[in-house]
Length: 186
Image (cartoon, rainbow, N blue to C red):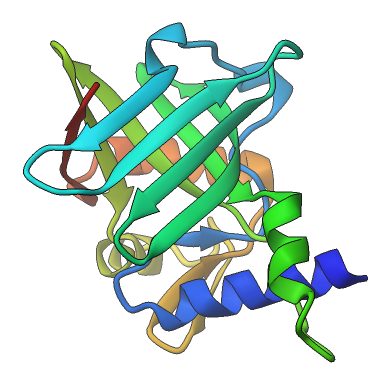
């Protein structure tokens, strides 16, 4: 029960952050689109910034991502997804992180959530793209019955199935909705 509470808290915090990623209730990953990219493993630093992240894979093949900035550390379970020619990382808060967040809470409603980033190699650097919520929403409004979504304040929450989310991301891959300003290097 505490895990459920922590996931809802995490989602709530993500939704309160105006510049946060587009959130999905379902994963982008499924076994048919599982990807393996050993070049991602290691610590990456944001160019001209102190932020960094480390991508890991354990002996069982489980991926993880640890993000560090001056405010703290966030730990995520990660799944690599290949859709078309693009590589995406489907991220969700790590179970231990959620348990820690819920310890001091009497009651904290939590809903498990995912967000995803597109990753593209450019020589020794990696370009990281987040889908911009406003642009994604405009695209979705042009065909509102194709993809499930809701607004939570100013934030977009994708509510469709994994298959619908994959179709949406393939459509987004052709549109100008990606903020790929983050460039990192090992």
